[in-house]
Length: 225
Image 1: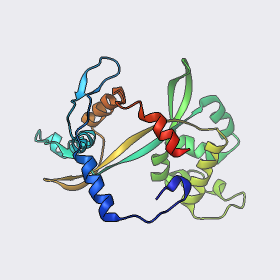
Image 2: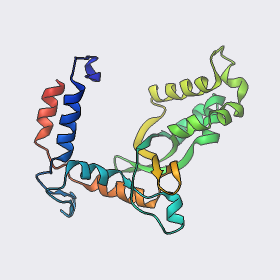
Image 3: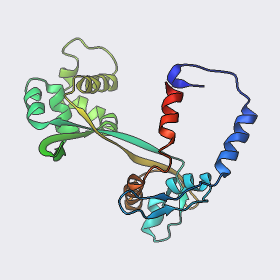
């Protein structure tokens, strides 16, 4: 299956499973190092499966509170997209559009960030928070959401409007980052938890790593072209 090309071809699931396992058991043939200091983080000869486990290794938040946290492997992470909008522009538009004012007053956070080396005053907003707090946003100015004849369920009205702000570049993508992790803790069972300090430090370290196989870039481009 090749989603990017909307193509599906017959395949042997047993063969696919066997090849997957063979790849996971292969040792990597070089060290994985940090770009800035050259520190070896993952050593040569580490199996691919163990590299993946290292990337997903975490600690249960509840176990951390009792100082009994053992390493566990996260099942998956829930990612969030953060957007920013120029404060002056948002405030000007919000004075004429109560829907934007409702968003600003409910989920926007005022910050100063650096864009192209220049510090600017902006509003920061999380896509996940918009989804989670759609009802608060709607109730801030309920008549404004339907005054133009818009139809649809309330969450959809908020989501569609937020999407339009992105398409019109009132809001610009700032960063994409993991927000939650799903784990199966031996002590506390299945949990969807926010990232803790251990996770955040791990992300910083991962972002410092140098990609160990730059020669594959051209091969991937040829396959996708």
